[in-house]
View 1 (cartoon, protein in one colour):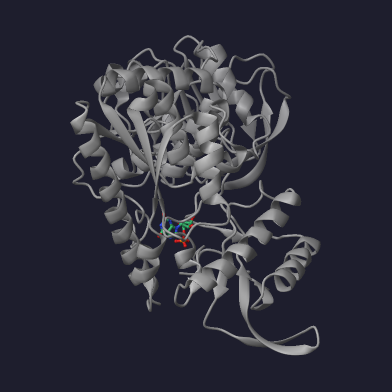
View 2 (cartoon, rainbow, N blue to C red):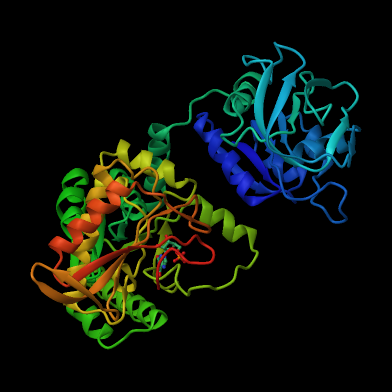
Length: 517
Ligand code: XMP
Protein backbone atom coordinates (compact mmCIF):
# COMPACT_ATOMS: atom_id res chain seq x y z
CA UNK A 1 0.00 0.00 0.00
CA UNK A 2 0.74 3.70 0.03
CA UNK A 3 0.78 4.72 3.69
CA UNK A 4 -0.73 8.07 4.63
CA UNK A 5 0.80 9.27 7.88
CA UNK A 6 -1.88 11.03 9.89
CA UNK A 7 -1.01 14.44 11.33
CA UNK A 8 -4.67 15.51 11.30
CA UNK A 9 -7.55 13.17 10.70
CA UNK A 10 -9.64 14.93 8.05
CA UNK A 11 -6.58 15.71 5.98
CA UNK A 12 -5.34 12.13 6.10
CA UNK A 13 -8.68 10.63 5.10
CA UNK A 14 -9.03 12.97 2.18
CA UNK A 15 -5.50 12.18 0.97
CA UNK A 16 -6.17 8.46 1.31
CA UNK A 17 -9.25 8.85 -0.86
CA UNK A 18 -7.44 10.89 -3.51
CA UNK A 19 -4.66 8.32 -3.69
CA UNK A 20 -7.28 5.66 -4.30
CA UNK A 21 -8.89 7.88 -6.95
CA UNK A 22 -5.51 7.57 -8.68
CA UNK A 23 -6.14 3.79 -8.59
CA UNK A 24 -3.55 3.11 -5.90
CA UNK A 25 -4.48 1.40 -2.63
CA UNK A 26 -3.79 3.49 0.48
CA UNK A 27 -3.97 3.03 4.23
CA UNK A 28 -3.84 5.55 7.07
CA UNK A 29 -1.31 5.12 9.87
CA UNK A 30 -0.76 7.25 13.00
CA UNK A 31 2.21 9.64 13.06
CA UNK A 32 3.57 7.80 16.09
CA UNK A 33 4.40 4.82 13.87
CA UNK A 34 8.08 3.79 13.86
CA UNK A 35 10.28 3.27 10.82
CA UNK A 36 10.41 -0.47 11.60
CA UNK A 37 6.62 -0.69 11.74
CA UNK A 38 6.39 1.13 8.45
CA UNK A 39 8.97 -1.15 6.86
CA UNK A 40 7.00 -4.18 8.03
CA UNK A 41 4.04 -2.99 5.97
CA UNK A 42 6.12 -2.96 2.80
CA UNK A 43 4.81 0.36 1.50
CA UNK A 44 5.41 1.44 -2.09
CA UNK A 45 5.08 5.09 -1.09
CA UNK A 46 4.44 7.30 1.93
CA UNK A 47 2.46 10.54 2.13
CA UNK A 48 2.79 12.78 5.20
CA UNK A 49 -0.48 14.63 5.76
CA UNK A 50 -1.11 18.18 6.81
CA UNK A 51 -2.34 18.93 10.29
CA UNK A 52 -3.37 21.72 12.59
CA UNK A 53 -0.08 22.13 14.50
CA UNK A 54 3.02 24.26 14.08
CA UNK A 55 6.38 22.47 14.08
CA UNK A 56 7.46 25.01 16.72
CA UNK A 57 4.88 24.19 19.31
CA UNK A 58 6.11 22.14 22.20
CA UNK A 59 4.70 18.65 21.85
CA UNK A 60 3.74 19.13 18.22
CA UNK A 61 3.49 15.77 16.45
CA UNK A 62 6.77 14.50 15.09
CA UNK A 63 7.90 11.67 12.87
CA UNK A 64 10.43 8.91 13.40
CA UNK A 65 13.37 10.31 11.35
CA UNK A 66 14.23 6.77 10.24
CA UNK A 67 11.14 6.87 8.01
CA UNK A 68 12.86 9.25 5.59
CA UNK A 69 15.84 6.86 5.41
CA UNK A 70 13.89 3.77 4.35
CA UNK A 71 14.39 4.40 0.66
CA UNK A 72 10.60 4.49 0.20
CA UNK A 73 9.41 7.50 -1.83
CA UNK A 74 7.86 10.14 0.43
CA UNK A 75 5.59 13.09 -0.31
CA UNK A 76 5.14 15.62 2.49
CA UNK A 77 2.08 17.88 2.41
CA UNK A 78 1.76 21.15 4.36
CA UNK A 79 2.63 20.23 7.96
CA UNK A 80 4.20 17.01 6.64
CA UNK A 81 6.29 19.11 4.25
CA UNK A 82 7.56 21.22 7.15
CA UNK A 83 8.34 18.19 9.29
CA UNK A 84 10.37 16.84 6.39
CA UNK A 85 12.18 20.14 5.88
CA UNK A 86 13.10 20.26 9.54
CA UNK A 87 14.30 16.66 9.76
CA UNK A 88 16.33 16.86 6.57
CA UNK A 89 18.23 19.96 7.69
CA UNK A 90 16.25 22.71 5.98
CA UNK A 91 14.78 25.67 7.83
CA UNK A 92 11.25 26.36 8.90
CA UNK A 93 10.47 29.90 10.01
CA UNK A 94 7.57 31.64 11.55
CA UNK A 95 7.47 34.49 9.05
CA UNK A 96 4.27 35.95 10.41
CA UNK A 97 2.91 35.68 6.86
CA UNK A 98 -0.02 33.35 6.96
CA UNK A 99 -1.46 31.99 3.77
CA UNK A 100 -5.00 30.76 3.92
CA UNK A 101 -7.24 29.79 1.03
CA UNK A 102 -6.65 30.17 -2.70
CA UNK A 103 -3.02 31.14 -3.28
CA UNK A 104 -1.09 31.65 -6.51
CA UNK A 105 2.12 29.65 -6.87
CA UNK A 106 4.79 29.90 -9.53
CA UNK A 107 6.73 26.84 -10.64
CA UNK A 108 10.49 27.24 -10.89
CA UNK A 109 10.86 24.65 -13.63
CA UNK A 110 8.55 23.15 -16.23
CA UNK A 111 9.72 19.57 -16.27
CA UNK A 112 10.12 18.34 -12.72
CA UNK A 113 8.99 14.83 -11.81
CA UNK A 114 6.56 16.08 -9.18
CA UNK A 115 5.14 19.20 -10.83
CA UNK A 116 5.58 18.33 -14.50
CA UNK A 117 2.71 18.50 -16.96
CA UNK A 118 1.07 21.59 -15.55
CA UNK A 119 1.16 25.38 -16.03
CA UNK A 120 3.87 27.48 -14.42
CA UNK A 121 1.30 29.68 -12.70
CA UNK A 122 -1.56 28.06 -10.88
CA UNK A 123 -3.94 28.38 -7.98
CA UNK A 124 -3.45 26.19 -4.95
CA UNK A 125 -5.13 25.83 -1.57
CA UNK A 126 -2.94 26.80 1.35
CA UNK A 127 -3.45 26.85 5.08
CA UNK A 128 -0.32 27.54 7.07
CA UNK A 129 1.40 29.96 9.45
CA UNK A 130 4.99 28.66 9.33
CA UNK A 131 6.93 28.46 6.09
CA UNK A 132 9.94 26.56 4.82
CA UNK A 133 12.55 29.30 4.45
CA UNK A 134 15.38 27.12 3.20
CA UNK A 135 15.21 23.78 1.42
CA UNK A 136 17.40 20.96 2.79
CA UNK A 137 20.84 20.49 1.28
CA UNK A 138 20.69 18.74 -2.09
CA UNK A 139 17.00 19.54 -2.62
CA UNK A 140 15.73 21.53 -5.56
CA UNK A 141 13.16 24.28 -4.97
CA UNK A 142 10.27 23.60 -7.34
CA UNK A 143 7.83 26.41 -6.60
CA UNK A 144 7.25 29.61 -4.66
CA UNK A 145 4.39 31.88 -3.71
CA UNK A 146 4.25 35.56 -2.78
CA UNK A 147 4.96 34.87 0.88
CA UNK A 148 6.74 31.51 0.68
CA UNK A 149 10.04 31.23 -1.20
CA UNK A 150 10.02 27.45 -0.85
CA UNK A 151 6.53 26.20 -1.64
CA UNK A 152 7.72 22.83 -2.97
CA UNK A 153 10.97 20.88 -3.05
CA UNK A 154 12.30 17.62 -4.37
CA UNK A 155 15.20 15.25 -4.44
CA UNK A 156 14.72 12.80 -7.29
CA UNK A 157 17.81 10.96 -6.13
CA UNK A 158 16.42 10.27 -2.67
CA UNK A 159 12.83 10.19 -3.96
CA UNK A 160 11.74 12.67 -1.29
CA UNK A 161 9.19 15.36 -2.22
CA UNK A 162 7.14 18.02 -0.55
CA UNK A 163 4.55 20.70 -1.23
CA UNK A 164 3.31 23.46 1.05
CA UNK A 165 -0.18 23.48 -0.46
CA UNK A 166 -2.92 20.89 -0.16
CA UNK A 167 -3.06 18.91 -3.42
CA UNK A 168 -5.86 16.75 -1.97
CA UNK A 169 -8.23 19.72 -1.84
CA UNK A 170 -10.26 20.34 -5.01
CA UNK A 171 -9.47 24.07 -4.86
CA UNK A 172 -5.88 23.21 -5.79
CA UNK A 173 -6.26 23.30 -9.57
CA UNK A 174 -3.67 20.66 -10.37
CA UNK A 175 -3.69 18.92 -7.01
CA UNK A 176 -4.69 15.50 -8.30
CA UNK A 177 -1.95 15.72 -10.94
CA UNK A 178 0.63 16.40 -8.22
CA UNK A 179 -0.50 13.29 -6.37
CA UNK A 180 -0.51 11.25 -9.57
CA UNK A 181 2.95 12.49 -10.50
CA UNK A 182 4.22 11.44 -7.10
CA UNK A 183 2.56 8.04 -7.24
CA UNK A 184 3.09 7.05 -10.84
CA UNK A 185 6.18 9.00 -11.95
CA UNK A 186 8.24 9.51 -8.80
CA UNK A 187 7.36 6.29 -7.01
CA UNK A 188 6.59 4.25 -10.14
CA UNK A 189 3.41 2.75 -8.69
CA UNK A 190 1.03 1.37 -11.33
CA UNK A 191 -2.59 2.55 -11.44
CA UNK A 192 -4.20 -0.82 -10.96
CA UNK A 193 -6.41 -0.67 -7.90
CA UNK A 194 -10.10 -0.70 -8.85
CA UNK A 195 -13.51 -2.13 -7.97
CA UNK A 196 -12.82 -5.27 -9.95
CA UNK A 197 -9.77 -6.32 -8.06
CA UNK A 198 -11.14 -5.21 -4.70
CA UNK A 199 -14.02 -7.60 -5.28
CA UNK A 200 -11.70 -10.37 -6.43
CA UNK A 201 -9.44 -9.92 -3.43
CA UNK A 202 -12.31 -9.85 -0.94
CA UNK A 203 -13.92 -12.91 -2.50
CA UNK A 204 -10.70 -14.83 -2.03
CA UNK A 205 -10.26 -13.57 1.51
CA UNK A 206 -13.82 -14.45 2.50
CA UNK A 207 -13.51 -17.96 1.06
CA UNK A 208 -10.35 -18.51 3.05
CA UNK A 209 -11.91 -17.18 6.23
CA UNK A 210 -15.26 -18.93 6.01
CA UNK A 211 -14.39 -22.30 4.48
CA UNK A 212 -17.52 -24.44 4.36
CA UNK A 213 -19.23 -22.87 7.37
CA UNK A 214 -22.45 -20.91 7.10
CA UNK A 215 -22.79 -17.17 7.38
CA UNK A 216 -25.60 -14.79 8.31
CA UNK A 217 -26.02 -11.11 7.58
CA UNK A 218 -28.53 -8.52 8.72
CA UNK A 219 -29.78 -6.30 5.90
CA UNK A 220 -31.03 -2.85 6.80
CA UNK A 221 -31.97 -1.66 3.34
CA UNK A 222 -28.95 0.64 3.38
CA UNK A 223 -25.89 0.59 1.13
CA UNK A 224 -23.30 -0.91 3.45
CA UNK A 225 -25.06 -4.09 4.50
CA UNK A 226 -26.39 -4.59 0.97
CA UNK A 227 -22.93 -4.43 -0.59
CA UNK A 228 -21.28 -6.45 2.17
CA UNK A 229 -23.82 -9.24 1.76
CA UNK A 230 -23.49 -9.17 -2.03
CA UNK A 231 -19.71 -9.67 -1.87
CA UNK A 232 -20.06 -12.47 0.65
CA UNK A 233 -22.69 -14.06 -1.55
CA UNK A 234 -20.37 -13.88 -4.51
CA UNK A 235 -17.74 -15.63 -2.41
CA UNK A 236 -19.72 -18.39 -0.75
CA UNK A 237 -23.14 -18.42 -2.45
CA UNK A 238 -25.88 -20.08 -0.45
CA UNK A 239 -23.72 -20.60 2.60
CA UNK A 240 -25.00 -17.06 3.29
CA UNK A 241 -28.47 -16.28 4.61
CA UNK A 242 -29.59 -12.67 5.05
CA UNK A 243 -32.04 -11.50 7.69
CA UNK A 244 -34.15 -8.41 7.09
CA UNK A 245 -36.19 -7.08 10.00
CA UNK A 246 -39.21 -5.06 8.94
CA UNK A 247 -39.79 -2.89 12.01
CA UNK A 248 -42.51 -0.84 10.42
CA UNK A 249 -40.33 2.28 10.48
CA UNK A 250 -39.08 1.89 6.92
CA UNK A 251 -39.80 4.28 4.12
CA UNK A 252 -42.18 3.66 1.26
CA UNK A 253 -41.22 0.75 -0.96
CA UNK A 254 -38.04 -0.13 0.96
CA UNK A 255 -39.17 -3.60 1.95
CA UNK A 256 -40.13 -4.42 -1.61
CA UNK A 257 -36.80 -3.09 -2.90
CA UNK A 258 -34.93 -5.45 -0.62
CA UNK A 259 -37.20 -8.47 -1.01
CA UNK A 260 -37.62 -8.20 -4.76
CA UNK A 261 -35.04 -5.97 -6.46
CA UNK A 262 -32.08 -6.79 -4.26
CA UNK A 263 -32.79 -10.49 -4.15
CA UNK A 264 -33.35 -10.60 -7.93
CA UNK A 265 -30.04 -8.86 -8.64
CA UNK A 266 -27.91 -10.85 -6.19
CA UNK A 267 -29.65 -14.17 -5.69
CA UNK A 268 -29.12 -14.08 -1.91
CA UNK A 269 -31.29 -16.21 0.34
CA UNK A 270 -33.39 -13.85 2.41
CA UNK A 271 -35.46 -14.30 5.53
CA UNK A 272 -37.76 -11.37 6.30
CA UNK A 273 -38.94 -10.97 9.87
CA UNK A 274 -42.24 -9.14 10.01
CA UNK A 275 -41.92 -7.42 13.37
CA UNK A 276 -44.13 -4.41 12.72
CA UNK A 277 -46.63 -5.15 15.48
CA UNK A 278 -43.93 -5.99 17.97
CA UNK A 279 -42.16 -2.63 17.41
CA UNK A 280 -45.25 -0.47 17.27
CA UNK A 281 -46.68 -2.05 20.42
CA UNK A 282 -43.41 -1.41 22.22
CA UNK A 283 -43.37 2.20 21.05
CA UNK A 284 -46.95 2.96 22.05
CA UNK A 285 -47.19 6.05 24.24
CA UNK A 286 -43.46 6.86 23.98
CA UNK A 287 -42.44 10.39 23.00
CA UNK A 288 -38.91 10.82 24.35
CA UNK A 289 -36.36 10.38 21.53
CA UNK A 290 -33.75 8.57 23.62
CA UNK A 291 -36.45 6.25 24.95
CA UNK A 292 -37.55 5.52 21.39
CA UNK A 293 -33.99 4.68 20.40
CA UNK A 294 -33.57 2.32 23.32
CA UNK A 295 -36.79 0.51 22.56
CA UNK A 296 -36.09 0.24 18.84
CA UNK A 297 -32.54 -0.95 19.53
CA UNK A 298 -33.74 -3.54 22.03
CA UNK A 299 -36.55 -4.87 19.83
CA UNK A 300 -34.20 -5.01 16.87
CA UNK A 301 -31.75 -7.19 18.74
CA UNK A 302 -34.59 -9.41 19.94
CA UNK A 303 -35.98 -9.96 16.46
CA UNK A 304 -32.59 -10.50 14.93
CA UNK A 305 -31.48 -12.95 17.60
CA UNK A 306 -34.71 -14.89 17.31
CA UNK A 307 -34.34 -15.17 13.53
CA UNK A 308 -30.65 -16.04 13.88
CA UNK A 309 -31.25 -18.72 16.47
CA UNK A 310 -33.93 -20.32 14.27
CA UNK A 311 -31.39 -20.46 11.46
CA UNK A 312 -28.70 -21.76 13.80
CA UNK A 313 -30.98 -24.58 14.93
CA UNK A 314 -31.88 -25.44 11.35
CA UNK A 315 -28.25 -25.36 10.26
CA UNK A 316 -27.08 -27.47 13.18
CA UNK A 317 -29.61 -30.14 12.31
CA UNK A 318 -28.18 -30.49 8.82
CA UNK A 319 -24.61 -30.55 10.09
CA UNK A 320 -23.20 -27.23 8.80
CA UNK A 321 -23.19 -24.75 11.67
CA UNK A 322 -23.43 -20.98 11.32
CA UNK A 323 -20.15 -19.54 12.48
CA UNK A 324 -19.95 -16.11 10.88
CA UNK A 325 -21.79 -12.81 10.89
CA UNK A 326 -21.29 -10.20 8.15
CA UNK A 327 -20.91 -6.57 9.20
CA UNK A 328 -20.73 -3.58 6.88
CA UNK A 329 -18.02 -1.75 8.87
CA UNK A 330 -16.34 0.95 6.75
CA UNK A 331 -12.79 2.27 6.81
CA UNK A 332 -13.50 5.63 8.52
CA UNK A 333 -14.91 3.73 11.53
CA UNK A 334 -11.82 1.57 11.66
CA UNK A 335 -9.47 4.55 11.48
CA UNK A 336 -11.47 6.60 13.95
CA UNK A 337 -11.76 3.90 16.55
CA UNK A 338 -7.97 3.49 16.29
CA UNK A 339 -7.59 7.23 16.88
CA UNK A 340 -9.19 6.84 20.26
CA UNK A 341 -10.01 10.44 21.19
CA UNK A 342 -13.38 10.56 22.88
CA UNK A 343 -16.20 12.60 21.41
CA UNK A 344 -19.12 13.99 23.33
CA UNK A 345 -22.20 11.82 23.44
CA UNK A 346 -24.74 14.05 21.78
CA UNK A 347 -27.28 11.37 20.98
CA UNK A 348 -26.94 7.84 22.25
CA UNK A 349 -27.47 6.61 18.81
CA UNK A 350 -24.90 5.84 16.29
CA UNK A 351 -24.99 2.16 16.86
CA UNK A 352 -28.71 1.79 17.33
CA UNK A 353 -29.72 -0.86 14.89
CA UNK A 354 -26.41 -2.52 15.61
CA UNK A 355 -25.94 -5.85 17.26
CA UNK A 356 -24.75 -6.84 20.72
CA UNK A 357 -21.10 -7.72 21.07
CA UNK A 358 -21.69 -11.07 22.71
CA UNK A 359 -23.20 -12.76 19.68
CA UNK A 360 -21.54 -16.12 19.20
CA UNK A 361 -20.23 -15.45 15.72
CA UNK A 362 -16.94 -14.42 14.21
CA UNK A 363 -17.17 -11.30 12.06
CA UNK A 364 -16.74 -11.09 8.32
CA UNK A 365 -16.13 -7.46 7.37
CA UNK A 366 -15.55 -7.17 3.63
CA UNK A 367 -15.80 -3.34 3.58
CA UNK A 368 -13.34 -2.66 6.39
CA UNK A 369 -10.80 -1.09 4.04
CA UNK A 370 -13.23 1.01 2.01
CA UNK A 371 -14.66 4.51 1.97
CA UNK A 372 -18.36 5.05 1.29
CA UNK A 373 -17.97 6.17 -2.32
CA UNK A 374 -15.88 3.06 -2.99
CA UNK A 375 -18.58 0.88 -1.45
CA UNK A 376 -21.08 2.45 -3.85
CA UNK A 377 -18.80 1.82 -6.81
CA UNK A 378 -18.46 -1.81 -5.79
CA UNK A 379 -22.21 -2.12 -5.34
CA UNK A 380 -22.67 -0.92 -8.93
CA UNK A 381 -20.02 -3.31 -10.15
CA UNK A 382 -21.90 -6.14 -8.42
CA UNK A 383 -25.08 -5.09 -10.22
CA UNK A 384 -27.12 -3.96 -7.22
CA UNK A 385 -30.21 -1.81 -7.82
CA UNK A 386 -29.35 1.88 -8.14
CA UNK A 387 -32.01 2.84 -5.54
CA UNK A 388 -30.05 0.91 -2.95
CA UNK A 389 -26.53 1.81 -4.11
CA UNK A 390 -27.21 5.55 -4.16
CA UNK A 391 -29.39 5.62 -1.06
CA UNK A 392 -28.82 8.50 1.33
CA UNK A 393 -27.90 7.72 4.93
CA UNK A 394 -30.98 6.70 6.87
CA UNK A 395 -30.90 6.24 10.64
CA UNK A 396 -31.27 2.78 12.15
CA UNK A 397 -34.39 3.80 14.14
CA UNK A 398 -35.89 4.96 10.84
CA UNK A 399 -39.07 7.00 10.75
CA UNK A 400 -39.44 6.35 14.48
CA UNK A 401 -37.23 9.37 15.16
CA UNK A 402 -38.75 11.49 12.40
CA UNK A 403 -42.13 11.71 14.10
CA UNK A 404 -41.83 14.27 16.85
CA UNK A 405 -44.35 12.81 19.27
CA UNK A 406 -45.77 9.34 19.62
CA UNK A 407 -45.21 6.88 16.78
CA UNK A 408 -48.45 5.41 15.47
CA UNK A 409 -49.45 3.51 12.35
CA UNK A 410 -51.45 6.41 10.92
CA UNK A 411 -48.65 8.89 11.49
CA UNK A 412 -46.14 6.54 9.89
CA UNK A 413 -48.42 6.16 6.89
CA UNK A 414 -48.72 9.92 6.56
CA UNK A 415 -44.98 10.53 6.94
CA UNK A 416 -44.16 7.78 4.42
CA UNK A 417 -46.28 9.51 1.80
CA UNK A 418 -44.76 12.93 2.46
CA UNK A 419 -41.23 11.50 2.45
CA UNK A 420 -41.82 9.64 -0.81
CA UNK A 421 -43.05 12.82 -2.50
CA UNK A 422 -40.06 14.85 -1.29
CA UNK A 423 -37.58 12.18 -2.36
CA UNK A 424 -39.22 11.77 -5.73
CA UNK A 425 -39.16 15.49 -6.48
CA UNK A 426 -35.57 15.98 -5.28
CA UNK A 427 -34.40 13.12 -7.46
CA UNK A 428 -36.43 14.34 -10.44
CA UNK A 429 -34.82 17.78 -10.06
CA UNK A 430 -31.38 16.16 -10.20
CA UNK A 431 -30.47 17.31 -6.69
CA UNK A 432 -29.38 14.00 -5.17
CA UNK A 433 -25.71 14.78 -5.71
CA UNK A 434 -25.95 18.03 -3.76
CA UNK A 435 -27.87 16.65 -0.84
CA UNK A 436 -26.24 14.49 1.81
CA UNK A 437 -29.63 13.55 3.19
CA UNK A 438 -33.01 15.15 3.57
CA UNK A 439 -34.94 14.06 6.64
CA UNK A 440 -38.66 14.68 6.27
CA UNK A 441 -40.11 15.17 9.72
CA UNK A 442 -43.69 15.08 11.00
CA UNK A 443 -44.47 17.41 13.90
CA UNK A 444 -47.20 15.22 15.25
CA UNK A 445 -47.88 17.29 18.35
CA UNK A 446 -48.12 20.59 16.49
CA UNK A 447 -51.22 21.71 14.68
CA UNK A 448 -51.94 24.86 12.77
CA UNK A 449 -54.92 26.36 11.04
CA UNK A 450 -55.20 26.21 7.29
CA UNK A 451 -57.77 26.50 4.59
CA UNK A 452 -58.14 23.78 2.02
CA UNK A 453 -60.96 23.54 -0.47
CA UNK A 454 -63.85 25.32 1.16
CA UNK A 455 -63.01 24.54 4.71
CA UNK A 456 -60.83 25.35 7.63
CA UNK A 457 -58.29 22.67 8.51
CA UNK A 458 -56.34 22.04 11.65
CA UNK A 459 -53.45 19.91 10.45
CA UNK A 460 -49.83 19.00 11.07
CA UNK A 461 -46.70 20.56 9.60
CA UNK A 462 -44.11 18.58 7.68
CA UNK A 463 -40.51 19.79 7.99
CA UNK A 464 -38.00 19.45 5.16
CA UNK A 465 -34.43 19.22 6.42
CA UNK A 466 -32.14 19.06 3.36
CA UNK A 467 -28.48 19.17 4.35
CA UNK A 468 -25.14 19.15 2.59
CA UNK A 469 -22.30 17.48 4.42
CA UNK A 470 -19.07 15.53 3.98
CA UNK A 471 -19.38 13.22 6.95
CA UNK A 472 -22.50 14.14 8.97
CA UNK A 473 -20.32 15.64 11.71
CA UNK A 474 -21.01 19.13 10.45
CA UNK A 475 -23.60 20.13 7.88
CA UNK A 476 -25.12 23.12 6.18
CA UNK A 477 -28.68 23.46 4.94
CA UNK A 478 -28.88 22.92 1.22
CA UNK A 479 -30.04 25.92 -0.78
CA UNK A 480 -32.75 24.26 -2.83
CA UNK A 481 -34.33 26.04 -5.79
CA UNK A 482 -37.62 27.72 -4.90
CA UNK A 483 -39.49 25.94 -7.70
CA UNK A 484 -38.53 22.56 -6.29
CA UNK A 485 -39.57 23.58 -2.78
CA UNK A 486 -42.82 24.92 -4.16
CA UNK A 487 -43.56 21.67 -5.99
CA UNK A 488 -42.83 19.56 -2.93
CA UNK A 489 -44.99 21.77 -0.75
CA UNK A 490 -47.91 21.79 -3.17
CA UNK A 491 -47.81 18.07 -3.67
CA UNK A 492 -47.53 17.20 0.01
CA UNK A 493 -50.35 19.49 1.11
CA UNK A 494 -52.55 18.28 -1.78
CA UNK A 495 -51.82 14.59 -1.55
CA UNK A 496 -51.20 13.87 2.12
CA UNK A 497 -54.35 14.15 4.20
CA UNK A 498 -53.72 15.70 7.59
CA UNK A 499 -50.87 17.96 6.47
CA UNK A 500 -51.63 21.61 5.75
CA UNK A 501 -48.17 23.19 5.95
CA UNK A 502 -44.64 22.42 4.74
CA UNK A 503 -41.76 24.24 6.43
CA UNK A 504 -38.07 24.41 5.62
CA UNK A 505 -35.34 23.97 8.23
CA UNK A 506 -32.55 26.49 7.56
CA UNK A 507 -30.25 25.61 10.45
CA UNK A 508 -26.70 24.41 10.01
CA UNK A 509 -25.10 21.72 12.20
CA UNK A 510 -24.05 22.89 14.73
CA UNK A 511 -26.22 24.17 16.31
CA UNK A 512 -28.97 21.92 14.91
CA UNK A 513 -28.36 18.21 14.46
CA UNK A 514 -29.37 16.64 11.17
CA UNK A 515 -32.27 14.66 12.59
CA UNK A 516 -34.88 16.42 14.71
CA UNK A 517 -34.70 13.79 17.43
P1 XMP B 1 -27.43 13.89 13.82
O1 XMP B 1 -28.92 13.96 13.92
O2 XMP B 1 -26.76 13.46 15.10
O3 XMP B 1 -27.15 12.73 12.77
O4 XMP B 1 -26.83 15.14 13.25
C1 XMP B 1 -25.91 12.46 12.19
C2 XMP B 1 -26.10 11.28 11.25
O5 XMP B 1 -26.46 10.12 12.00
C3 XMP B 1 -27.73 9.65 11.58
N1 XMP B 1 -28.43 9.22 12.79
C4 XMP B 1 -28.54 7.95 13.18
N2 XMP B 1 -28.07 6.81 12.63
N3 XMP B 1 -29.03 5.58 14.41
C5 XMP B 1 -28.34 5.63 13.25
O6 XMP B 1 -27.94 4.56 12.76
C6 XMP B 1 -29.51 6.68 15.02
O7 XMP B 1 -30.13 6.61 16.07
C7 XMP B 1 -29.25 7.93 14.36
N4 XMP B 1 -29.57 9.22 14.66
C8 XMP B 1 -29.05 9.99 13.68
C9 XMP B 1 -28.40 10.80 10.88
O8 XMP B 1 -29.37 10.35 9.94
C10 XMP B 1 -27.21 11.48 10.24
O9 XMP B 1 -26.83 10.82 9.05
